[in-house]
Image 1 (cartoon, rainbow, N blue to C red):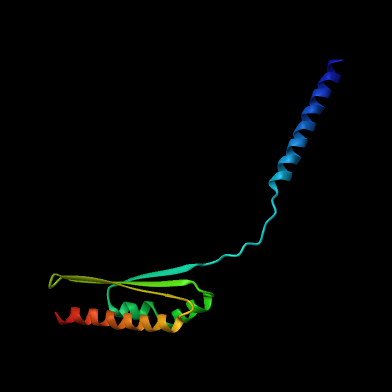
Image 2: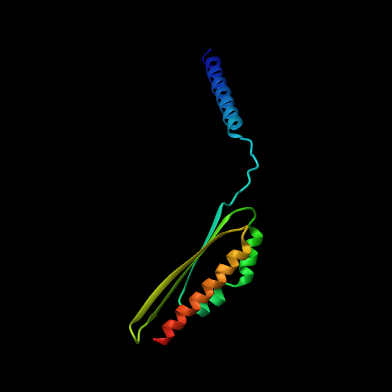
Length: 130
């Protein structure tokens, strides 16, 4: 008689474990929804020590490729940190220039980038005069 009782308890345990396993697996499966990624703003920050670094690091083709990736009315900001230090004359200087625009105003943004490059060139030429 003891063996029948043991079989009954074993069968209950197995059945209980089986039901728990199925319910856990069943509830853990969730429906995957297609979600799209939306970019609201892109911010780029570059730090340079000379004008040559700017020319070699950042080209106009890069901007064109960036605008191809963007669509809609995303905001775009470009920050340029310029610095220099001359050990022989104990000169140190820095400048930060930020251009902010949107993807819809590509020509205006590129015009401001050109102004920024001209300002950076003046900054480094001023350093060379002292």
